[in-house]
Amino acid sequence: METLKRVRMIERFLAAARAWVGSEMTARELIAAFVEFNREIAVSDVDPDGGDRFLLSAAGATAPHLIDAPTNLVGAPEAEIQFSDKEHRYIGLSRELWPRQSEDDVEDNADDGLPSEIGIGLSLFLFFDPPLEADRFSTDQSASPDELEGKLAKFIEEPLVAEVLGSRPTKITAFATGIG
Image (cartoon, rainbow, N blue to C red):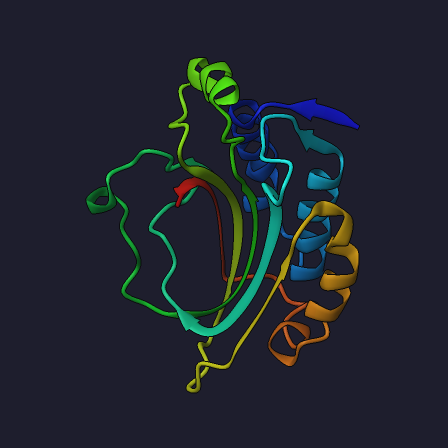
């Protein structure tokens, strides 16, 4: 397993996501690629108490970012982040990386160019047409990469997710963002 700092993880994630966004992969294949990518890389400068976790979500209708390629939105002013007017059904996969909070760690991370007080989200969102009338929502959160397999198995059985696993998404977005 490779170990990277958060700032390098952003770069590596966006590079990997370029292949996913431009592919003909199904939702199942994209989910597997996202999980496999993250399984192979540990992140060294995260809080040991829950600073590395996955969020799995799905909704009947939401609007995607207006981005066509993997994009680093960390530090982007909210006014510059735009969303489509058209809603889609979606599956969202995110890995949240929260920094260590001791004074020594904050100093050590100061040279990476990331604000020390925010977490980083690495997200792959899969959008499908048509959106659903009712906004059925299913989400599950895994506290660590070690717990992901069990949570993922349950998540992909949710009807909102299971119904589109064999489909190619209408739109795929991949982005890094500041959270917190």
